[in-house]
Amino acid sequence: MVSQKGDETMRRTLVIFKPDAVNRSLIGRILTRFEEKGLKIVGMKMERLNVYKLKQHYEHLTNKPFFEELLDYMSSIPCILAVIEGKDAVAVVRRLAGETCGRDASPGTIRGDFSMSTQTNLIHASENDEVAKYEIDRFFKPEEMFSYDKMNFNWIYCRSEKGMYTEIKDKGKSVEEIEHAKKKMMEMEQKKEQ
Image 1 (cartoon, rainbow, N blue to C red):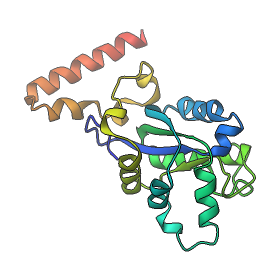
Image 2 (spheres, helix red, strand yellow):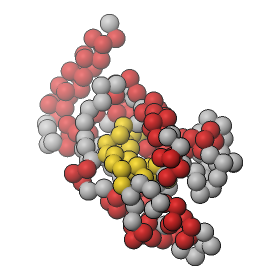
Image 3 (cartoon, rainbow, N blue to C red):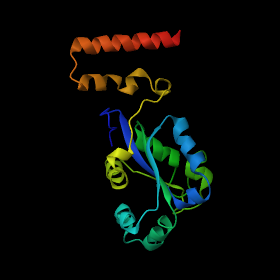
Image 4 (spheres, rainbow, N blue to C red):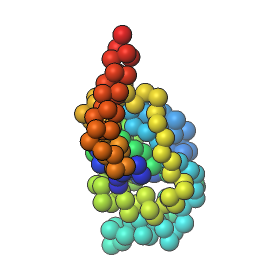
């Protein structure tokens, strides 16, 4: 899912902190990994997931023998849901999460460090951009997500990765105005380096 500002380089993904992460008091440690990587939290809430939403969410697992157990587990206590934004957010979050089965996940990943299971594997992470859009829409209303500038944004991405000129261009500015804005931004960056 593209960020609300329309910046094609910044994507959004859904992360669900599952009941085992909540019960084991690992929310802060896991969330810190996303933030330290440079990802931005643009929406977060606690919710006890109802079976109807869970059946929609796990529809692709309906025929699996563990489906009912999964529904019971995911609805047993409240979960934390988060919308996370960043460049290639879906792929980055999935790499941080690690393999689905905690026993198979590499050390250094969230599941590799904290999980031994396939089902109780701490978090759900959207599998691609298209799925992320559907999942975010399923669990979040537009007004529950926020656009804001992070103070450390300039230290996370280089100029070409930021997509900083996209927003200016989208506002219908002339070429001269865009060039002027680029010049101003470069001057600001040079001042920061001094």
